[in-house]
Length: 183
Image 1 (cartoon, rainbow, N blue to C red):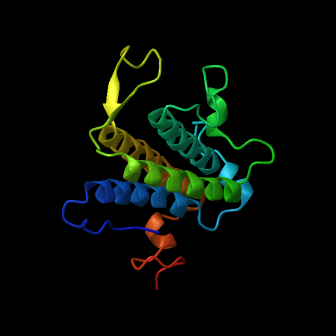
Image 2: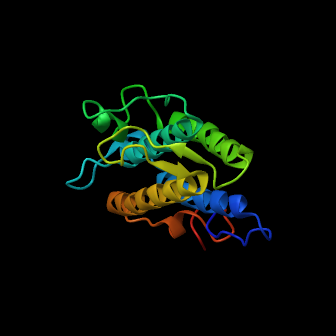
């Protein structure tokens, strides 16, 4: 699990953006290390957020944005009536299954970002009250948006994990990336 992003190869902006996104994904994965399904569903604050719910949300968001960029429907359609479901694991959904799905989504993200001719290539934003009508954004914007979204929720995940058992990310993974407590 990435805890430091190495400098990109000269001129590899795509690689740099994808590496920073992977670093933030790692923050969420680290927060889940060693937890039971029950703990991952626990909401230790006044908020509705749990680690399992955050995981599901970031996976859905990433998949949805890549679908938008590819101009295909997302795997899961969300609207005001079911938006809250993106923040909690439903009956039968597991952390392990969400993590496995995230691996596929992440591979799809990388494939898409590497396949477009230029990071300046654009796609239309979906219709929504929070987007200006007719707005287009670049693939670079998409990468930065995914980094920001994932990083924000990685921060939430740190706080939730610490609230559950007092552990922080660096107690769960050593600087070389091995899982477990540091000596």
